[in-house]
Length: 311
Image 1 (cartoon, helix red, strand yellow):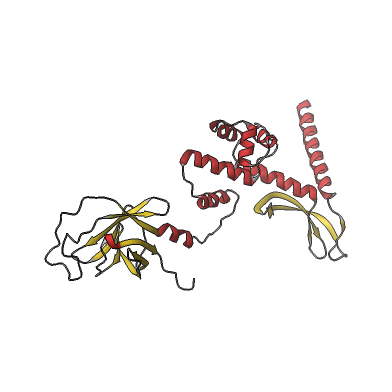
Image 2 (spheres, helix red, strand yellow):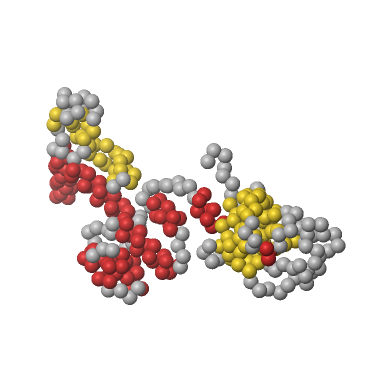
């Protein structure tokens, strides 16, 4: 009997607590609607309420909002909005959207910096660093500070960073999928500058079946020329085929351009030649066909995809 009484008392206490919470929620509204000035704004419990917090999509499991019983206009209490922000922050912490206190401390230690110097490095205050590194911190870093620290860590450990790709992946953790038109960026990566390097001359003589436009004498000669992009990486080797009189690029790695693609060649004499090329294999681009332009006559090459229709 005693156990039954205790259980009943516990149920009663829980029920009373829920009633008090419900009453507190109800007190958030219950006033004349400021929109229609006729109806009453009543507290309404909404499950899985879709909203935005700090501009990012968020679903509140149980939201209490004010809805007019006449015009259905919605009202929001500051206390409830603050609760949503706290729920949003806790969800991000749970999903590891922010660097943890341990990760921030590890990054700062890896850089061998004091809190003060680390704060100066990323543009915040020492107090902020101290607060973010606390095991039971009350708030996470700002999104901008968190992204900056993550980029710093990635750069420190991995080297070069694709900043755009990095930011797009981070945005997904916040429930945002962003489509970015990267055509211009792709083109800049395809623009290359030829930088000749001393290599052994080819010992292969021009075949008798070579086309008339081809250079028929090795004395006229040509050297394989490495294609170096603006960032200093080697894209491939420029070669001249005597038999077909074609100028081609043998790629150091696979590059899918499709056919045709735009080509602009500048010779050592300052002449600019525009045309189209084609990709014959994953590692082979034909830049010019039936040409007398040997590799030694080429000063630079610009390769880009043509604009799609309607772009």
